[in-house]
Amino acid sequence: MNLDKGERLEDLQCHGLKIIQNKDLYTFTSDSVILANFIKAKAKDIAVEIGAGCGVISILVQAKNKIKKIYAFELQQELQQLCKKNLKLNNLSDKIALICDDVKNFEKYIKKESVDIVFSNPPYFKPTNFEQSKVKKIAKEDATLPLGTLVEVAGSMLRFGGTFYCCYSAERVCELITTCQNKNLAVKELFFTENGKGDVKLAVLRAVKGGKQGVKVRKNLVTNDKDGKYLEILQTKNM
Image (cartoon, rainbow, N blue to C red; front, side):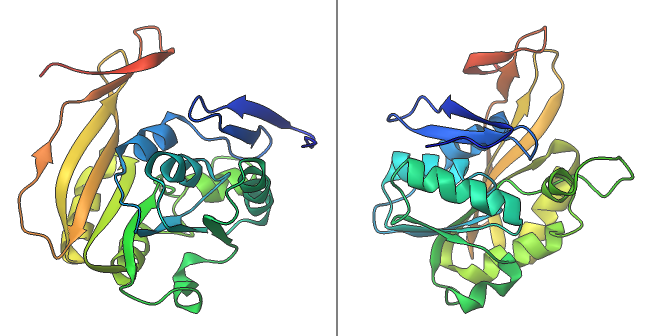
């Protein structure tokens, strides 16, 4: 497959999968891989990704779980084109359906309360005046997908007992948990990631629609060494 300007081909180190990223657009980080590894699914499941980007999370989730179908919603045209290339590259276009639309319009494509799993690595920074490309701004800042909208849409898609997986800024974890609870998504599992200096950066959770109260808090996951370099093998921190 030919690469366009700014693109590079990378090995996902999973079942021979490859991924094309574009440094001029938004490139994924370890957040996406951590979330993909956390998601558990059954072969008969129907899943939805909110904010597919280049497609890396859906590709990894499909490879690891071999599920029936994933509907991957992506709003931005530039990322849609990149995602299409990655699905074709990995021969997954029949298992992962890219939906080029705002996820708020999901009822045009799937029925309410028909989905087993919804997962998302959404924009989780509040809007700023920081100068960056439009693509990166939409991918990072939540103006186009506020937390309330994200959780409400996820809850509307999920059947009773369905599962919502999400990662979010650790600074806003209280907002995330409260919003889930208000939308009848009971948080059942939660952990944080931290860098090698002990700074907590990311919250990752699993919530169940209509689930009972009670959450299991797992050990922190260390993603970097003390010099800030990504660890090749992530480590859980002894509490």
